[in-house]
Image 1 (cartoon, helix red, strand yellow):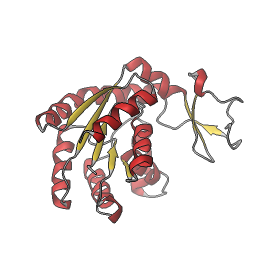
Image 2 (cartoon, one colour):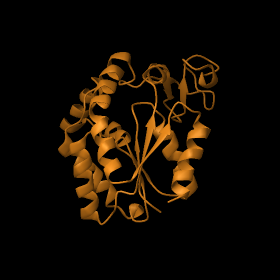
Image 3 (spheres, helix red, strand yellow):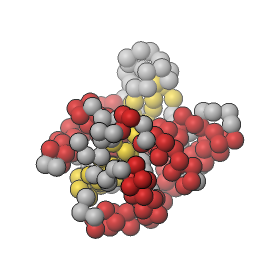
Image 4 (cartoon, one colour):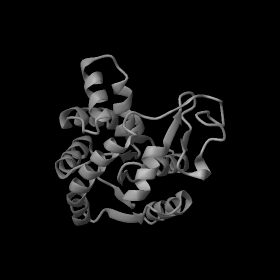
Length: 218
């Protein structure tokens, strides 16, 4: 099984697609966003730094991110393949990630790029709500994924909340940064002949089918 990387703007669905692949191929899902959010809950210098940085739509210092990623990929459950998403975010990170993989004895694997319109992303970001108990995700801007009772989880009755970084200002900052940095990353992986592009505006099922075809063909 090859290692898999997802490149996509905020709320493009890379996490959802990663989980689908995890269930089918039984490999670990390494989300830098999840790692950073967990650390942001810690009452420590680094925890408070990460919390404030993410709340304002900024990016965590590279040296912190590199160490977290290398430590995670060095665990035994990654030896037979893994999925990483949310990283790299710029060309320097992409080059450093290649060095990290070389040091660990891994290759880059497959890089899957989800391309999606900005207006679609904005609705997903500002409308996203999560259950504080079971982590089920809803979206108040989408009738298909809106909770039946306002601010209440359909599954467990838990309270729904909005992440600190799921506001319009934060999204605009994150998206602007993403657009500015992504072209170089895409070119980098195109030159390595490992990049595959998918239309992220399609349904979850359609995108999942395309992802599976890429994995199966490799």
